[in-house]
Image 1: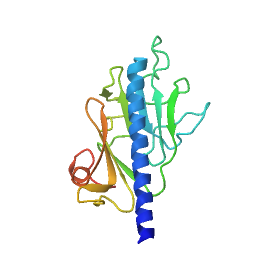
Image 2: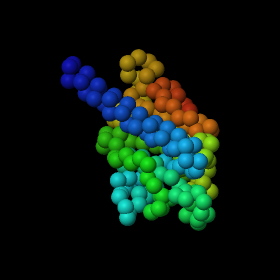
Image 3: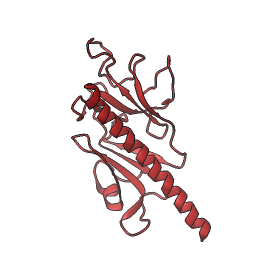
Image 4: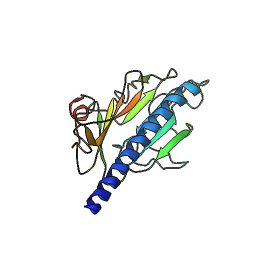
Length: 187
């Protein structure tokens, strides 16, 4: 019994930590966009720890990690590479997060989203035409799936929702994770 409780404790802590890390990254991107008066992007990356001269790519699914970067290195100079959702060599990377524990899987919505969220200078989410719709939700699950733990309502999974105005929130509600169109259950 003790071993099972300890295992559940470890799985819950891992899941909470991963969801909070992503929540922190979204808040960082949003606040930096307002502070810097320019577009800042969070994107899922397969190489988030790439250091210059290499640049992190934005082609991950969330399990490999993510980066937050300024998508306009010099607002005084109009460049074809600015505001395109790609971390270019001259654009500062503000935050890097490595891979999630192998036990956690992710799914992002809307369908076709390439794992990014962009914030304009006012802190609102925006669509980048070349990339598609901005993230509206991410579900994180482990081997337990979206099942109730510690009561009927609390899930083992975590859902992260991003409002139209750019405000993120984490949910643990079993029903919300399974029925919200921006989450739609575990992968």
